[in-house]
Amino acid sequence: MSDYVPTINLSLHTLLRECRSTTRPQEDMFVDISLWNRENIHQIFRYRKFNYDFVDYITCYNDGEHVIGYLKPSYDDFLISITRFLGAYTSSDVVDNEELTEKLLQRVEKLKQIKTTYELKKEFPFLYDDLMQGRKYLDAVEKMPKETEEEQERYEAAKHYYYSCGLRRNVERFVTTQAEVYRRFVTQRKEYKKLIESKSFNRYMKNNFDMDKVAMLAVHTYLCRCEKATDEEEYQKYMSLIEKYLESNYNKDVAVTTKNGFVINKRILEERINLLKRKHAEKEVLAGWELVPEGKELVRVTTDHKPRVLKMTEVDIEALRKAGKRKEAFYQESAYTAKVVGLEKYKGYVGYIYPNGEVLLDREYRDDSPKSDKANAIYNMKVGDFETLSRLDKTTLRDNPRVGRIYHSKHWEDKAKEIVNRVGTLEEQKEVVQLVKRLKEKRI
Image (cartoon, rainbow, N blue to C red):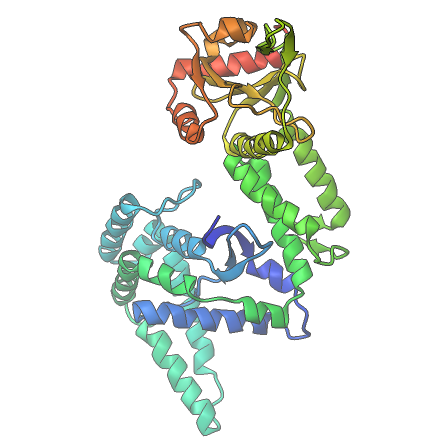
């Protein structure tokens, strides 16, 4: 990743409970961050939302080179919260698009129609809770000390702020203020996103938090993402960050406890990482035959008509090694369903089966034996033909009309990506599942 992009969200409550390095009460530190973000809200929307400051989570923005990256207010938390408060929340991930905008604005129009407390409670329960908590807080405001000029000013400011939300007036006044602020939340949310992405909690975090514990909590979250990853690219992105943590100078002899009471320490992390890698390695399945056997050996004919095997120079070997590294990176990043290894794993070809029913057969790269010659083309076939065609030797295979060939030329990755990114049919997807199942059960 060349740019900093959001990777994970960390619970601020967990950070405050588990990772503080100061003796300051966590409530005071939560107020620090809440007030800081309240100013962000006010700067964009020109309205001070009552009772919620959208700071339950902090987002890590990462470029793939740092374990943590930049810690910023969570836009995801903001977006999900306004969706929930408008009664449009679902259990699935919220997709930030025009369709969501239309849906939320429809809910704003619905809010404008609310006339009674009962209707508000039934249709917008989170806003109803806002109203009730606000009225309760106003009682506390009335009891605030007013003995000094400073206390009187604080009282007047608090009273003005909370009364401006319509908390003590009729419900229609409260609904009017809330409909207006949520309309702004929906229509100006991109401005807010741009603003908070220009901010950073990093200095505050370094001054007030144990960053070794913060890193451990972040890695735990990366692991959760890896465990739930639906494609290879997502898995590799988070596993790469985990590997950087393992290689880093962070003190790993610390422990943190998640909000669910799950204890994280070095031993538990290592066990989970090793288990995850073993499970991921299960994508490798074994075929009971050699994939694409060599056939006749390539030789050079000399004047004495004696065959002699070609020898490679050090320059040739280094060129092949570079090509092999490039090839290895391509397959690691591609979202294949299974990697098929034949009986001659370290000599012959391996197969990469993709969800769309495409199969690529290529030489396995080995650093101690960099066989990545351009003469060793990639063979492409449909999953339904794999069991038959992959048994053929190279000479026979390349003449088969159902087989495509991609040479390791300058733009071979583009050609391969075009094949593996094709949208497969439902039937092709079923064939992939059936083939992988048979290979794992070693019935073929």
